[in-house]
Length: 279
Length: 230
Image 1 (cartoon, helix red, strand yellow):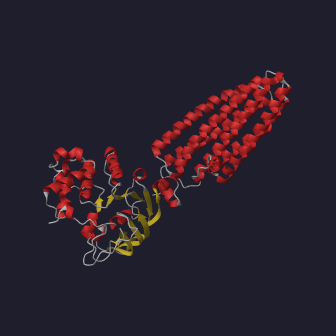
Image 2: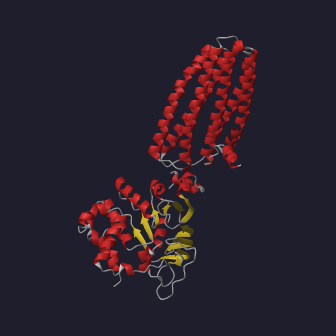
Image 3: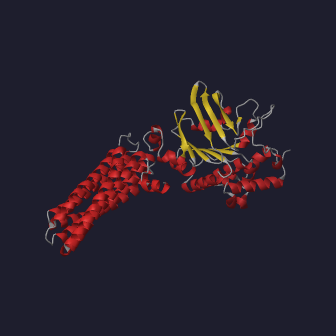
């Protein structure tokens, strides 16, 4: 059995059956580099030659009309698309902290621990609040109660949920409001100490107050985590993110500081999309 | 605006209404200044009174534009060029209102001058007025047509107006010394000259806002920055 303290602390991804490449000197924890990425669902290509560097410990938003490939790209970052038949990266690479995550032998389970994900609809397990957060640790083999207690509290505090649930940790996660459930899912993702958190429209089903709480949480989390968020809510992208990428028809049209994108984008298509002239 | 229409038609309507109000306010301001100067040149107190009365309508339009602008920000949360258009329109309305105030000031001074014998030095005002109004019209044209080059070209022209104001001031002070009996009249002309100099300042501000609206570039205070850096 492995304890949290015994969990690997290296900043590079674990590669099974072959030595992990030495991290490049300039590589920063949580940094993502995407190069010339093409992605296909069968014969249908949905990402075309996407290249960008996602800065570490900052919030990067992907925006664009439905079907533009932003969620597909997000799911590439922790290889969630592996679960879809005929879905494949046909060209290019994604490197996290300098390591190609699609290289043969990369431990996908370890990758997904390091690159956590929060989905559009909150999806707590049919378990208690405590067990939801402890789930990933137990999967990782942590059994020591005190370590799990500590990690659960820390994760719930990080997800700004602790004060609301500390007295009912052992009631079902389903008993929480929608916003609380989403923050519970964020706590669950944080419990396994990821470097990167992916969020796929995390507030689309939440009311404005719950949305504000999640957005405030995102702001706090970026001190420690690299956050990539897909959102259809342009105001949310403007409020929450430091960098924004605009996608259209599977191509990255523009990537820049959010302030620049929303005040004076360089590309006409970006301007027309964000100002509501097409989409 | 050559950009395609918004998906949301009401957004286009609101932006269009704001722009039309800028045009309305600028034509009222121009008319008010024209009436004030006519009142001065033709010694027409009635025209001066009309110019002063015009100010109320312009004040109300400024308030309406602020209300419309805030309403637009609240309802549509504009970004990029749309946001710049709204912000610039609101700033333009403030400059237009203050420009119209200068018209009122000129009309009030003109009424005082009209109570005394005419002063030939009133001719010093004509070229200043022509210069200031040309700047004003070009600034508005630049804003409406999103003509960045025209807007940029307005800014340095303010120096010419400043120079004319200084020259007029010197000349009028000389005349005060030569003819102290007309001291009040010359003082009023100095104030009118200064009002026109302020009209030029507002036109410059508006041209700067036009550049910001069209090109997202803030060209304000560049001379002072470069001077400080130098």
